[in-house]
Image (tube, rainbow, N blue to C red; front, top):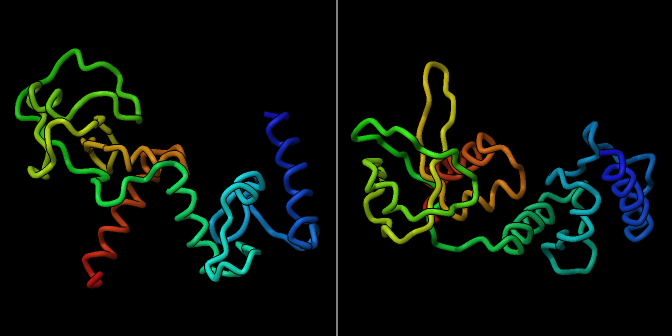
Length: 179
């Protein structure tokens, strides 16, 4: 990982020069992620966008720029607007010999339903690419279908638990506000 962090240090110095930032004043995580969006320097340079489109994106102190930048990150990683992110999965029978699942959907939803794994959201077409996501909760395991947009969230942070938290928080916010 040393080469990764050397590269990020070089990108950090490039970023501070380009944006005229004091490299000694910027605060970040122990690993180097910074600002509201917690972008690494290479991601800052690649995905940062100004909400006002005034050229310079300030992810350190401008929440609007951070939101625009995260949206840009998702767009670049092919977020599919209007498509599902995740839905609960229920086993209608005992399933054995299920191969280890990868986070990027490689099967169709209908492949899983044929095994007896039912999605909570019935309106999702069987041809939709899906993966089975298994998460630990306090006492047991939760089973979910993750769709392509779930995978896109994991491009931002690899943890399926993180992606699920983002999805569930967004759903809770959406239910409280008329979008």
